[in-house]
Length: 248
Image (cartoon, rainbow, N blue to C red; front, side, top):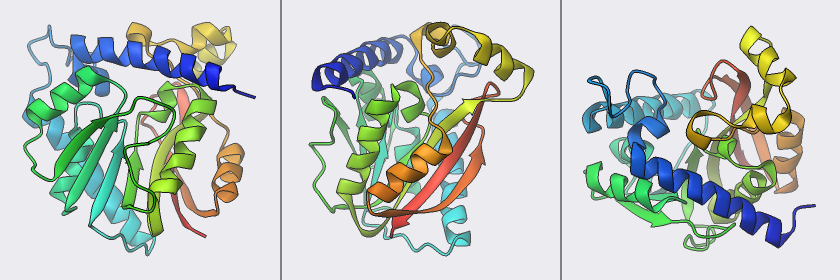
């Protein structure tokens, strides 16, 4: 069982890593394209970076529509908002308020610099909860390429918080890897010692949670798993899922 001290240590480690990444090259750290580093001539422009968020959120909202889920548009939560690309995407599809939360002050500084939407507000997460967000106040929680970078116990704690802040009838959507992939790259990863396998570029870590464990966690929170769509956000070395959950 993870203790409060363990969780505090974990969150401090995650904060240090992403504060440094946010200071070095925040847009590349969010979308790690080898040709998009700041030092390269083809580095992310704010406009192109934010456009990827609009595309992603448009696709997600269309998927929720296919699943027959009606989502209120009063307030959305972008957990692990980084430099704000998905917050901008959520504002672009009509949410009246978008709350972007992140552990990294340097990432939040970049989000405030490049995101043009008055609907977006950015708040730093400083603990293992979402203390800045009121209970039963959010219509949609969305998190992608975030929970994978923290130890599972910490990630699962935040999922519990998603359902604390979600209104009755809200939708909570989050992405997580499940296991190393069956590809050659995934088999190589699975064969490495765990500490080596977890560390990626510039100190980033990757962690997976088996799908049945996520299913049990969601059910324990009184929520319902609508679908677990295959997802490639974690890259070719990992199998992943985009989980769509709603009130039971």
